[in-house]
Image (cartoon, rainbow, N blue to C red; front, side):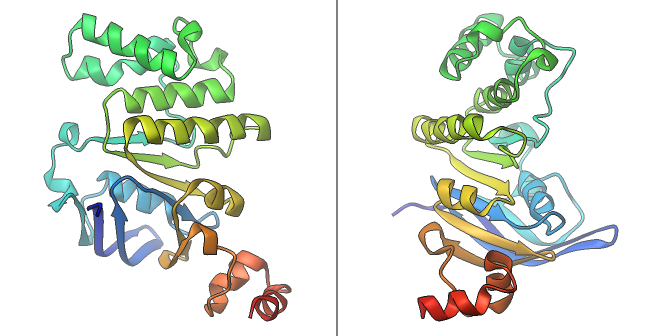
Length: 249
């Protein structure tokens, strides 16, 4: 039986006029978990909280039974891929990929070996000397993934990782993430507003609404009404909720 890698207990935080309210969640080691919700529902704030970006909150977030903020940043083994990829535009693809190794004092030989391995794995070895602004969206995405994965994270966090990609590139990236999940055996949590994307990629899906984790569903049951009218309206739309419930009852 797999262990719990992430545990969130009664976590609340207020940022300006927005609040996350009493979030409780357990994520199992090795699963892919999606945070699904509309813009402004609190998905990204929760993802940033899991990464340990905030220090003033109530409740707690545990990574393997240790409070996240008590773990030094360099020892958290968390990879984070930003919605806009967060690449350093003044650095080459290679320099972006090896950045974590460099600031952690790894040798140039190790930087070169692992940098080229990651680039080859993600099919961007031919772009190593280019700069991010010269790349396609999919290539920037793979560069950001390579930079995160080179540090061998046990938890990979991705904020709307596919939102800026065209449909064909999205499908390629879906397959790439599945490959990464298998090869690295890492737990993945990603944010999305796309119902079908959540169902396609995740084992379980947490539904965020107005700063609350309203419900958690297995992906195969995402579109099965369960009596929570607020979630059903979110998933099916106001006009189709009653009809969808009657059909499946």
